Image (cartoon, rainbow, N blue to C red; front, side):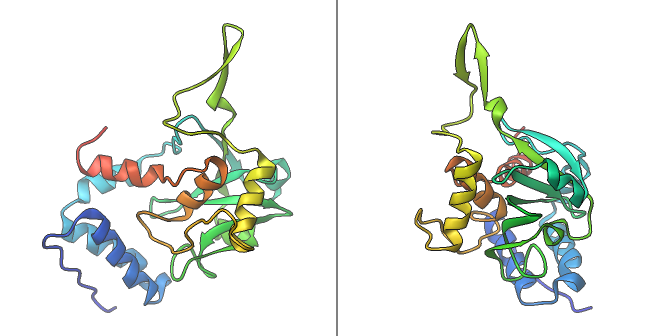
Length: 222
């Protein structure tokens, strides 16, 4: 196995992660991604913090959204078109997609995995699962609750709205066909990844809460 070196002098976390992603794009991912990630983390001296994040069994907390566990392709019968679904990969990160119906998803991924040369495209949910069974669907309905007879919006940062399932799917499809809302189709592991895309389809916000959690953990946040 070839050894992949990344010089870290003066680099910030975003630069480190993106250079690791560049290596993944130019080499056979199934053979080197695990070693590449381990090498980058080892060189950066972040082993303990990263291992703590990866070992966590908690489902992601997307602000007001609740992650509902699902399992197997047959559970698609319980999904609605426009649902945001996610899956925790063995390496510890989460991959996200918009459910498009008929056991298909729209996601920001390559044709043969999460990385490589990601594009926003429609694919069978089997591609999204990648041989795994357990995944989750995000329920955003808890972002609104009934308090004292009035519907109140829970603290959800500065989200202007949560799009309906129909609107969410339409936004996802629009990126593939005309891109009328102007979503940036250039993949960036830190600033424009699969989670940014899925959350944008549902909320209009370009956000990745797992990136935020990772950076907060690395730099001492809670």
